[in-house]
Length: 200
Image (cartoon, helix red, strand yellow):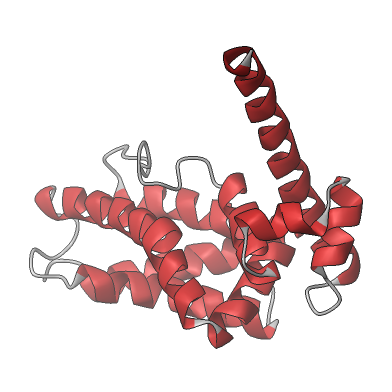
C-alpha cells in the first residue's frame, strides 16, 4: 500500500510547491514585496503556513525559488550564449533580451524583491550567487573566451571586468529607474564594452 501512495504524495507535494511559487510571483506583482506575507502566499496557494515553512525559512527564500523556477537551466546545465561567430551581434542579442526581461512585470517584480532581500541577508546572497549568478556568469565568460580565440577580444582581457563594464550600467539604471531600458541602451553598452576590450 505504501508504495502505491508514494507517487500520489509526491505529485501532491509538487502541485503544492508550484502553487506556492506561482502565488508568490503573483502577489509580488499585485501588492509589492513589503506587503507580501507567508500568510497571503499560503492563502493564495491553498496550503497551510506550515507547508511553506517546511520548505522555506522566509518569504525571501520563497521569492528566490519563485525566480529560480522561471529561469530554466539555472543550475548551470545547458546554459549557453549564442555563438554565431560575431561577438558584437551575439552580445546585443543577449543584452536586448536582458532588457526585455527586466521590463517584464512577471520577472521584474520578483527580481527587484530578491535584490532587496539580498542586501540584508548574507546567506540568501550566497545562495543566489551559487545557484543563479555564478552559472550564468560562467556561460557568459565561455562565450567571451570564444571571442578571444577568434581575435575579437584582447587575449589578455579581464573577463570579469568586461562583464562589469557591460552589465553594471544596466543594473544601476534598472535599480534606480534613472532612464529607459531599451534596445538602444543595450546596443550602446555593447559598443562601449567592445571598444574598451578590442585587440590593439
